[in-house]
Image (cartoon, rainbow, N blue to C red; front, side):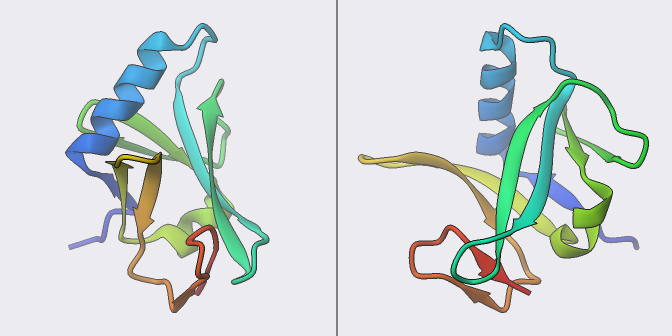
Amino acid sequence: MTKQIISLSENAAKRIKEIMSASENKSVGVRVGVKSGGCAGMSYIMEYAKEINPNDEVIEDKGVKVFIDSAAVIYLLGTEMDYKKDNFSTSFTFNNPNETERCGCGESFKI
């Protein structure tokens, strides 16, 4: 069985649908990737996808399209994207089994 690159929790899928329906720009979904930075070395990035890039991996989960930058696939394999809301903040979180370290503030990670 092939491991899915990324999956969405029910909360994440619901929140992405809300964001997409409220968006005034014409997006085809959301794009998830990673970039160098942060105290642990890498950070997750998430943005509106206005078009499908030829090298994107396209994941459809719970009625949501997520486009994965081809360079990020190896870092995201098996990751679950979640959406958390508490008294002081709301955020998308990434439960990544490939992480070997995460910084104290939770903004960056190492593989």
